[in-house]
Image 1 (cartoon, helix red, strand yellow):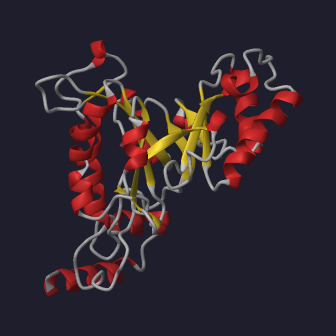
Image 2 (cartoon, helix red, strand yellow):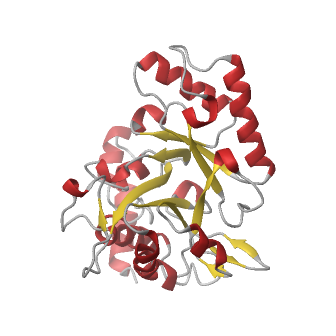
Amino acid sequence: MVKISKLLGASALIASVAALPISKVTEALEGSITTQYTSDLTRDVFVKQIHSHNDYWRDIPLFTALSYGVQSVEADVWHFENDDTIYVGHHQAALNSARTFQSTYIDPIVEILTAANPNNTFTATETKPNGVFDTDSSATLYLFVDFKTEGETLMQYVIKALEPLRAKGWLTKYQEGQGISWGPVTVIGTGNTPFDFVSKQQERDYFFDGPLKTLNGSYPVELNPIASASLKSLVGENIGPNGLSDNQLDLLKTYIDAAHDKGIKTRLWDVAWWPVQKRDALWRQIINAGSDFLNADDLELASTFV
C-alpha cells in the first residue's frame, strides 16, 4: 500500500508545478506516483498483424517485436538426446546454452503477463486475464514454435516447457465439444510438429500451423487457427519485378478466401525481400488480397505497411 506521505508529496508536487512552463511540468512529474502507469511496457504500442520471422535472430528477441506491436513471433527449437533443454536457433551451429526456449520466450512472457495481471483489490472482479498489449488487452500473442528436430519427442518437451503459462491459465485452449477458449498466448506448432499427435488430442493448449494450399476437412479452425504457405507454392515460381500478375493475384485470393470461409487466418512466407521495389509491391498485394499476417524480417518497415 502506498504511504500517505508519498501521496501528500505527490499532491504538493502537482500544486507546485501549476505555474511552470509545460516542458518543466513534464520533467517535474516524470516518475512521480501520480503519473506512473501500471503497465508501462506496451502502454502506447498498438497491435499489428505482423509475424516476426526468425524472431530469435534479433538482438533482443520477443521484446523488439512487441515494441512494434507485432502480434506473432516465431522460435526455431531443437532438442538433443540426454538433454532436457530446448534450444533456440536457426541451425545447429547457431545454438548455445544461453539461448533456450525458456530463457528467450517462456520466462519473458511470464514476466510480462505477471505485470499485466496484478493481484490486488482493483483486479479482484476480473474474469479474463490481460494479454501482453495494454492497448488491446484481449489480443492474443501468437507464439509459433518451429520444430527442427524429431517431432514426437520434442513435442513432449515443448508441452512441459509451457507449464508456467499453463499454470496461470494464460494459454489458449481447445476442448472437444467446447471449441477454442482464447488466452493471452496462442502456441502454434510448425515445422516437424507431429500432426497426428496434435490432431488426436481432445483437450490441448497448443495448435497446428495449417497447410494453406491443401486445407480440407482434416484441418478445421479448432486445430489450426492460422494456415501458412510459401508464396511461390501458391502462385508459381515466376514472379515479376513488379509483383504478382493479375492471374497470380486472383489465385492467391482464392486460397485466402477459402481459408477465411473456414474461419482460419493466413500467413505467407518466403516472400522476396530484394529488390526493394519488388518486396514492397508484393507486401501491398498480399495485404490487399486479405492475408492476415505480414511475414517480415524488417519489423520497423513492416509496421508502416499494416
